[in-house]
Image (tube, rainbow, N blue to C red; front, side):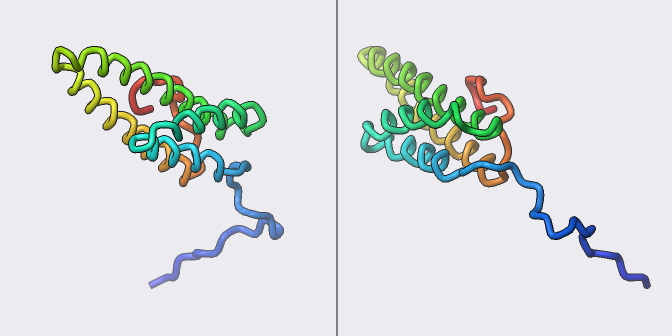
Length: 128
């Protein structure tokens, strides 16, 4: 039997290649969106933060901010439609769909963030 060489090539002490950028603010915005399902106002705080921090961010983090901004506005629109149509009962299904949609988008966004990946399709309406 031969042993496999499991050593990493010498890169002169350089750090591993990972995208640069602070992920903390992006993570906080995802959490604010999830908390907004209970408190409401934290979603507004989150979208303001996303608008503020998007311009100075590296490209891969900018995709997360764009995803978060679109999540807020699409979610707000769906919530509005759900509230209006709740008078004819279908709105309750729209509101339930909106909650599930928001949770899935936040969870997927946090997964990409943990892997330090850009959102594949930040302008997508569904799940990237």
